[in-house]
Length: 113
Image (cartoon, rainbow, N blue to C red; front, top):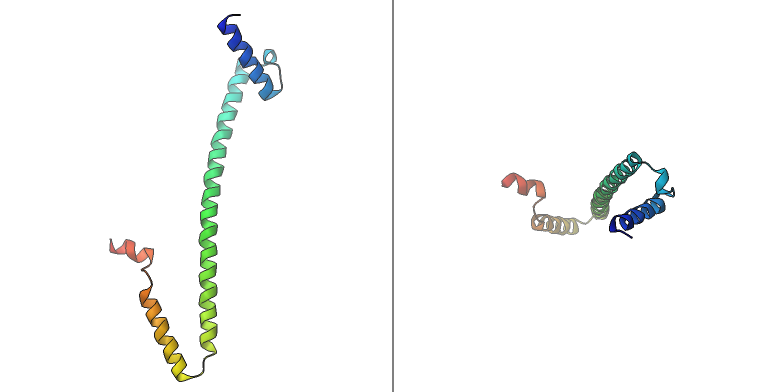
């Protein structure tokens, strides 16, 4: 068997496995169309993967923001239950110190550059 005939049989087998239709029933335009469809589907798959990655990053950010807001609410609720002046003064000093120790926000860093 010649090399061309072997390649053609291999191609026909691949087409039949992929489409379920014998290669003899598929004309050249069909193969081209199938190739274009496969290329489009690959592009759609890549786009979907990128969108999924972005969605995961957004979800992580939202989850972190939810935790921050929950802690802020807890701190406020505890502070509202303190009635002793000395305890409130100590809490205020501690919160001010913690506030001054936090790293600058990303927006402030970008504005300085």
